Image (tube, rainbow, N blue to C red; front, side):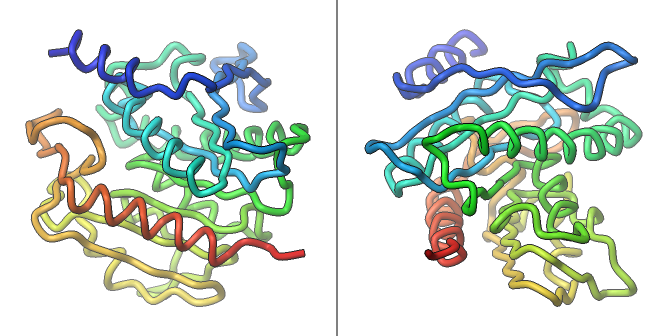
Amino acid sequence: MLRLLTLLACLATPALAEPVTFPAETSRDGIPVTLEASLHLPDGPGPHPAVLLLHGCGGLQPSVAQALDLHAEALNAAGFAALILDSFGPRGIGGGHVCETYERLGDARRYRMQDARDAKAYLETRPEIDNANIFAMGQSNGGSVTIRLSQRDTREFRALAAFYPWCGAFNRLGSNATLTTPLIVFGGEADDWVPPDDCTTITANGAEYAVHVYPGAAHSFDLKIPEQRFQGHLVGNNPAAEKDSREKMIAFFKRHLARP
């Protein structure tokens, strides 16, 4: 099964994806980290709006890489560049290691917020990228990172998307949260890992907030894998949720483009 998923991921990777590297401000145990990413550019000279794509706590495993490649392909077709960032591989972390404890998940949210800013800074050096229109989306732990980014004191991204995130990532007083950046959240009704309840009951102010919950969808509904148990939780593809969430994310980003 792993060999098949690896093959599928390789077949799905757009041929024009460019491997890139740039330094991370956050080290690992005092050792400098060089982040790795793949840059997917749409047709034309640009400058293009761009979307940073952040994986979940399992890292850039083959099925995750395939899903992010498909997001990148759809974004390219809509005129967006896409940068798929690997936060764990360059730090020697993989195989679901981060998923195993709340402490590791919390640590990852913190250093990945800085990774996102490092990736944005890299994109701003590229002449093909429109620096006024850089967005970010994240899956699971990466989605929790985008929730945190939506509440920064200053708006660092044009808009953000979170796919099946831990909604406890909201900084809030009671049921109210203040956003500086527009945010759209996608959750699965059957998600028994990070149920979307906190995302649906929270009241957000300061910037646009939207949440969509898909009936019958489990965690990782945009991965091309059959429903199965991973570390005790139900994960797996839901074609309707995958298609609709991708379309809604792109429409949300288009609506929040900075116009000349």
